Length: 333
Image 1 (cartoon, rainbow, N blue to C red):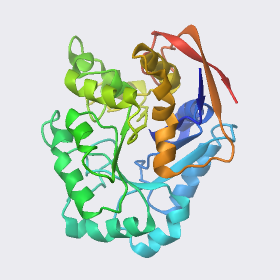
Image 2: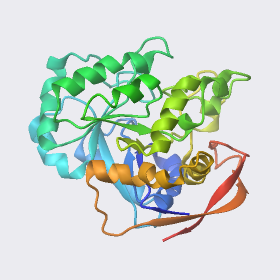
Image 3: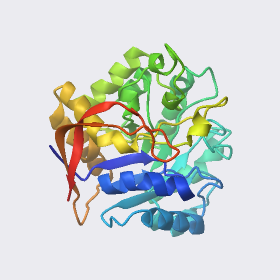
Image 4: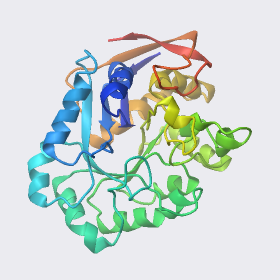
C-alpha cells in the first residue's frame, strides 16, 4: 500500500526534550502538519513563531516536511495579521482553560468582541481552527458548543472554520449544514469510547480532551471517515505528556499517537473495506480544502508485517503500547 503526501492537520509537538523525541515520528512520515500553538508562553507573535518553527525543523534531517504554523487566538489587529499572514497557516481558538495550556484563551463568545479579529481573518483568508468545548458537564461540552459553531458560521460566512477533533454525532451532522464548516478527526476517536477509558479500569493513557464519547458517536465519526466524506480531514491530535504527568492524580489530557498513526489507519480502513478512501482521509481532502500544491511529493509505503508497539519512547507511553499491529511502514520516498 502506498500513501501520497500524508498530512496531519492537528499536531502537538511541545518543546525542548519532548519535541526532539516526538517530532521525528511526524517529520519522517508526513508531508506536512498543522502545529498547535498552546505552549508556555503561547505562540502569539512573529519572533516566537519563527523560533518554534526553527526548533521543529532542527529536530530531524528530513527536508521534505512542512510545519504549518498557527497562532494562539487573541485580539490581533488587522495590520498585525496582514504583516504575519505569509508566515502562518491558521489561528487556533481555545476557550479559556478548557484544555492544556489554554488559560489565555477566549473567555467570552460575544460577537462584538470577536468581530474585529474574525472579520480581518475573513478578508485575509486566514482559517480559524477551534477547540470546541464549553465548560459544562464533560460529556456534553462538545455538543453544547454546537450553537457557538453555528453563530460563527452564520455571521462570518467567508471564514473557513475547522471544528477540531470532533467526537459527537451532533457535530458530524452540523458539518453538513454550513458550507464554511470543516472538521478534523483523530485516530483514537475512531477507535475509542468512554468504556475504553474507564469502563473496566481507568486507563490514563487514553484520557484526552475532548474525551471519547458513546458508541453511537464513534459510529458517526467512522461513517464520515471511511466514506471519504470531503469535509473531513485527518488530524492526529497526538499530544505527548511524560509518564509522570499521565499516571498521577490530575492526569494530563492527551494521547501520544504519532508512532502508530499510518499503520493503524491502514488496519482500520482495511477492516472496514474502505482502503480506497484512506488516501482521501489522510491527504486528498485537505489538499482540496486548502489548495495545497507541494513541489515535491512524499510517498509512504506500508506492508503487511506484524510488529509490536514499544512500551515507551523515552518518558512517553504511546497509543497501543505493547500491542501487535498488522501493518508497518516499509519505505519513505
